[in-house]
Length: 428
Image 1 (cartoon, rainbow, N blue to C red):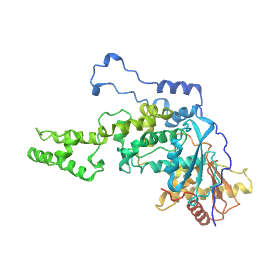
Image 2: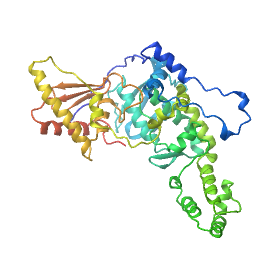
Image 3: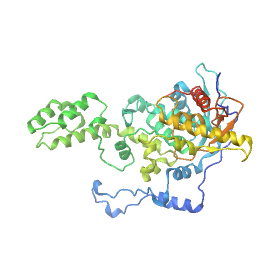
Image 4: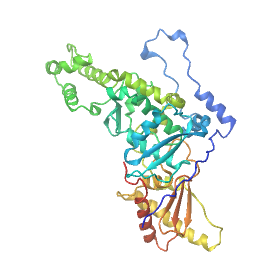
């Protein structure tokens, strides 16, 4: 027996998100204004120039507030069309973003196809877009433009990617995803992120972040040198590598080893990738998102870089508003019982290591694996139903309809089966 995610059969314009009060908007505009540095300080060295003011935390401003402001000018009456195969999300996404008619301010209408090419009945009113953006962010993490550990990615130059303008389009995809209510990339190295937005001129990447095994081994040898003679021998041994980066020199003292390692890391991750980094910045500037990153780096840090924060049962429970019948009715009594099943099920999923996970539960109901920077619209709902013994999700309405069953054991089994057999389950 199969379980279904309710099809979305029509495209209906969404209501644009606007600041709740003019007072908030004025406060936000003042905070968001660019920092102006007096020209009289132009004779200062770069290292001594005042940093742009980080306005995070002022007046309780959140990433959601900023995203709501950026989304204020989105065009909800027109759409960009995407035809996506879940088995290769990048292919359809790249075609869609490269179309001359693509407009980042317009909504998206996503059609998914199954593996044999039959069209899945799911015209987009929000849910397919969120699922698409979630899968797209996962696909971007494995693209050729990035290198490094899964939780600390850096840009890397690739001539074919540069020819295809991939750096720009990936930056644009990330900006569009976050402003349109989707997830962020959540995998950049914190060192690279701070350099990208101009908060740190020199990158302080640990040697362990070096993706090239041979280079990492050479740098570790230099770093671990215990005498000046050993250091000179090692720099001579690796002279070709160091000359390529322009940091080969005669070692005057043992302390020079840190400088030469730092200079090589700076060249490897930043200087040799200047073209890639600039095009990536240009893409992130879509919908004025890069300006938001510059002004509020700590608010958007968790949406751009990996963090250890995990989704919790309590967080998922709070996302969904529970729809209950009238107090005192028979239906209300049954719903109260099943509501305890739902909450215990979330705790069960949080504690176990196997699938489904809390991310799978959230994905099942909303098309998202993570809580986005902006509000999830419409408000996710938890509804009780007796027509199916399995859960039914309508990602367009952000609704999970859970079955009213007689025991927790039945409920848990039905929820596991329903979520694990939903479209797209198990895809990376």
